[in-house]
Length: 577
View 1 (spheres, rainbow, N blue to C red):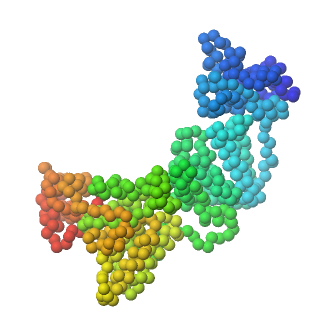
View 2 (cartoon, helix red, strand yellow):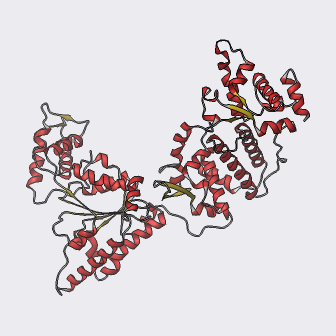
View 3 (cartoon, rainbow, N blue to C red):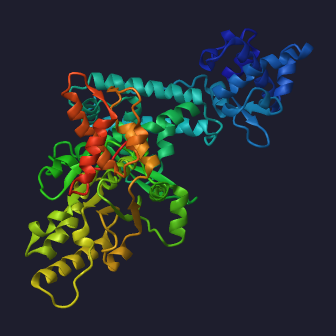
């Protein structure tokens, strides 16, 4: 007990042997000395108020100014609170600890007994293999987790966050020093350099790798736990969530993936995993992967069924009828955790994550059906694969059953290989959806009916988002109509909507005649696609003039041509604003 006796008897605490280990000021050390003297005299707990009054002037409540001194000793881990309600020192204000009591921590008592709490690490040597390197990194992850639990007030009160951080610094330095003198390549370090990961991304990766090696489904897969490992305050927690959201580097570079699961409280939580090919590379660095993972765009290049569309607009960019927007918003809300909870409880939705929706967009050409489908995909941050149904007969004569199945089989295969959930867009789907022929009929009728039966079967089994577009709903077979849970009509825009479309589609940087009147143009019943076409045709005509000024009559001439043509407007991808 020589260290204890020396400490409580020394007049100048700075000369005591343990002072350098306390990592505190002389004033703080004198408070520790006072508390230790009372402790050895049999008084285990002391009120904060009593400590302050005995050691600092009580006139005009000056001792209250020293609350921060005692608070720092709590943060350093040399004292712990003893109070009803279990106040957490790191979350308490100075005044909150005034009515509590304190006692020496286990760490302080051990220091007084042994004279030192220094950490002695083994001699720095090169890593012999990547497993030895990983052991050090996994120890660091465990330390980060201890620090996180301490900050949450979940750790043993005998722990000192200062000591834990000291250990973390020593271990991090040791890892860096060992890496510097290691000549054999370390696969994880090479991977970090190749991907350009920062320190926080590396810690997330190592935590998930630790979980993989332990074969667990435990704590380090949870989003909040991973964020705790890399955050030291509430602000950082909010900021660091971006590292695990869609669009983050770790996800977009196919390093990690996640599953959304219904937790015990009824909400949806994310559970993270390392991608299979990444795990293969780390665990078996010398074994070559047979099949490389391809992106969806690369896979599409090797087939001739689907077109890979890249949306540039979201739903906020498209002029929609209020009822249509409301319906689409309801589709999107399927991913809301409260909505998901209700649908699952009612037996409407199973464990499958994401949105299940089979939708028909119907209406005249140029009313924005395809553009809206693409904008919905953009809003949901999903790719979109389009199939032109008008080609089905010419492509698949004589093999309708086999090849209609192939559309859906290939779609599923592409989704699985690319590990994405695209939206399937069936454009011009009248051929599939029209009423089936009754009676024997011709061989063509039989083939058509057989093709539709297979299509109906595939619609039943489809998981995800499927959108079929058609010009007419009245001719749709009732069996198909029942299989689609959303049927959304795209009407020709009214005058107010047409004015809105003219306003946003007209070139901003062009010159217009004095008195140019858009309201005059909006009187004509045109679809968004027709307005878009008329503006382009007018622009070509005006651009060749020496004085390129747009006049109302220029647009009216093109409107007359468009409305007088034998075609029902030009086919358009939709319209945006």
